[in-house]
Image (cartoon, rainbow, N blue to C red; front, top):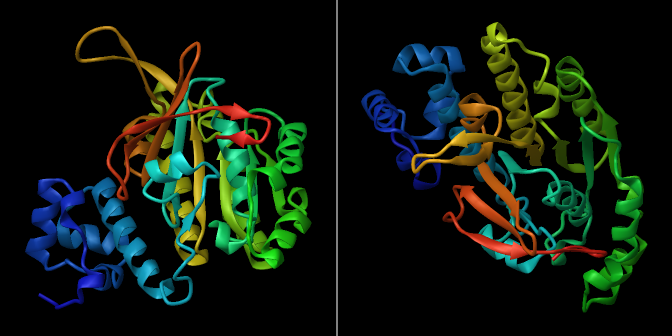
Length: 321
């Protein structure tokens, strides 16, 4: 068994017992020992499933990327959501690397949340922004230009800096021009966008955030029941490449998911995120929004950074608060 530093060690508790036993048995307890192999080679050595192998590689890649970049970006691992209570709920904000999913029924505030993050990533570093742009991929509706302009016009009221230089930077940033917008209608177009267009854009523009609103739309209607294996492969292909871009370029990835009705254990129907386990196993953090006649809530369903809990929020002219 190869030795490793504590910072390089995997957290075995995030895996199921069978995966834990396979890692211990093979001496694969650090990201360094794992990432020297391809996923196919590693799967043969451990006899794990493809899904389990990929989850191990995601965890190893996140550790490796964190160790490499922690000295370069010590204060820039967490991105503010623009709402203090939601930041606290998430353990500080949105964490870099991996995929954050936001799901919920129609009209609960998912796109509002995404628009706000597309602006907070442009904020100065002291405000927990990244002073960078965003790539916004729309798959359902046209990009809500009028709403984003309304939010931009309220930025100077929503965010305040004591430092004059940072306050001037906050006011002078051209927020609209820093959002690269793409409209996608099919799975193949989405794969082309992620595999070809985004890597080129990342080389030429200061982008630190990728938003897909929504991942669900292109996967509904294109597949028959007999196409389920192909659907799972396509989902995995997209998620794996998003993880790769996230680690290589130090990105935040935010994907919107819809909900579907499921029969709960205690009887009755319950709303759960769509796309099933083939997608859920590839998500790092899962958030869910809900609404009643008078309130909206955002809930952490699972995350490596914080325990499951929820907080209320509201949507105003300024954004999510």
